[in-house]
Length: 262
Image (tube, rainbow, N blue to C red; front, side, top):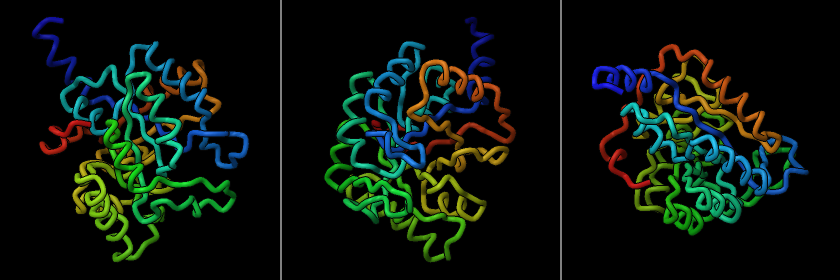
C-alpha cells in the first residue's frame, strides 16, 4: 500500500461498522428455551474457525480503539452477557487457548445470584465479586449489564440512575477500575436510556440490532448460537458486511480507556 492509498484505506476502515459477537451462557444447550447457550466444545470450534480466517477475538474496548485508528480489519469483538459463572469456568480457558480476550457484562446487583428474570429458566448461577476479579486479572474487560437486568426504557429516573451510575460505581469498587462499557438488558434502548448511559460516564454501549440508530451508544452485535458452525458463521459475516451503516461514526474512546490494558 502506498502512502497515498493508506489514508483512504484507513478512512474506509473507520467508516465500516465493527463486528461484535454476542454470547450468553456456555454450558449444556439441551435445556435452553431462549437459545442462548453454547456448549464449550462448540465455542472451541467457533473460536478455532475465527482464528482460521485470520481473525482474533478481543474486548470491545480493544476493538473500538483499533477501529478509531482504522486498524480493526482483523479483529472481532467478543461479548458475554448476563455475567454467568460458567464464563470463568468454561469460556475463559478456551479464550486463552485461542489467544482471544472478551468483554463480560455483569450485574453487580445480583452477584452470586441467578437469572431470575428468565421465567422459563433454567436457573444459572451468576458470577461473584471474586470471579469478576479473577476474570479481570486474566485479561477480560468487565462491563456493566445494569444493576438487576431491567429494561431501561421502562424505568423511572431514579431506577435508571441505579442501573447506570450505581452499577458503574459498584464495579469500580470490585475491580478498581470504572467500566468503559455498558450493555442494555434485553438489547432494548431508546434516546433517554442512551443519554443516561453516556451521562453516567460510559464510553460505549452495546445493543443488538439498533438499525439506523447505531452508534457509540447503540453498537449492533451478531448473536452467536450453538447452531452456528463454519457455514453459518460465514453467512453471518456476509450479512454483517452488507449492512448499511447510516449515521455510524468512529467511536471516540477516552484517553484513559485507550491506555487501559485489556
